[in-house]
Image 1 (tube, one colour):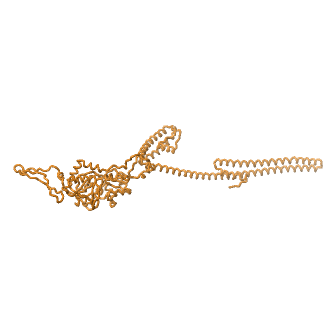
Image 2 (cartoon, helix red, strand yellow):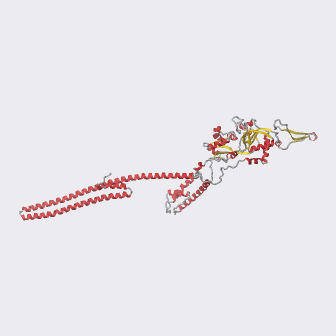
Image 3 (cartoon, helix red, strand yellow):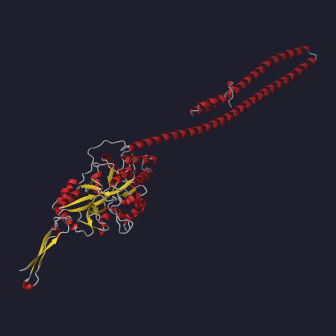
Length: 603
């Protein structure tokens, strides 16, 4: 029975190699001369492409650790190693081909250009068919799939924000305040004021024995926040209820605060200035943002229809497009140099840069997509490479190579042992102590200045009072002296009047004596004269005695008046000395008694 064998010729083999055919099916004649059934191959066609007879493949590659490491060996020719390079070597051995890898002319991965349909980097060269395959973790995007074909996905990649780790000095000022958010601190302050007023109001109860001022109530509530008690003896029920309520509230606040601050000081922790791309966009005036020019991320931001990616591209990337970095190394240098945030492949950071404790990576992942090899659009090599990649995955070769190259955990965030507190940890406490000490000294200076000003005003008032009192005392003394002078005049007048009256009476009697003589009785006249002489002798001592009595009375009056003046002045001096103004009292004494002690009058 005649039959027909069907063979295929492999088009994927090295130039000049002998033509190789392979039996793929059999076609036998049917009964009665009818056509028979064609028996074709049941396995995948790629499974029969196990030998490419040394076909030479042109590959493009860029370094992306740990997937691909490149080592320059010639003019743009590189030797590759790494996790994906090991998989590529496994495929080469299974398929029996050779290859040569080089880097793209512009050093980019591949992004759409301004002119429609044109691409840069490795994707552009593959589209122009100057290379056969891209051996690198190329992101699988919808835009790129229009110009190249992707093999089976090898791994899922995600991009993370990388920034400079905050310095401890930046958080030293908030070591004792970041335990609560600012809203909580506002509530604590409001509670302190309200509790102080409530405790002050309850102290006005008629059943309360001890009255508390508003300032003391504030200090009591503030002390309760610091876990301090009080010596007050509360007797009213309202004060006791307010006291218990305040202390229960402050006890809870104190417990929460101390628990957090103990853990914060014992464990080194860093606060992130932001945690998401949205928060970074809100701080776009403070930070710059970028990524490697030409990677798939550029197309994701540039071609985004709307939303956060579009806003970031318009406000943060497009105005500074010319300053985009050419490599992740350059981006990391910019991160360490200033306030710059770099978006990069997470596994590459963990492998290459995680040991640098001045850097940190945020956990949020963006643009999680598959990465794999890519070939020319419509190339039959895609099915062959995909078939072998599936076999390598199913047999565990993927995991074996990954364990060899996977990044080791970073030790920057791990605390090996307890560390002693540094000045940065306690900076806020010492700062508060210094500020409050300065405030206390300034308050003391203000109090002394205020007291001195009040003292000067009081001294001026006292001096004015002393001057007024001195003037009144002088007037009183002058009036007293005038009274004394009047008394002297009155006494003199009285004495003179009495003397004149007695003289007149004497003259009258003398005239009577003369009348007796004229009567011719000599004996009687002599008797009368002698008698009159005796009487005058008797009257003269009485007049002298009256003069002495009047003089003594005058001297007593002068002494009384002087004693009154001195008594008034000494009483005022005593009052001034009791007030502590001895100098003014001395001046007052000297001023008021200058006439008595012959002292100069300073007024």
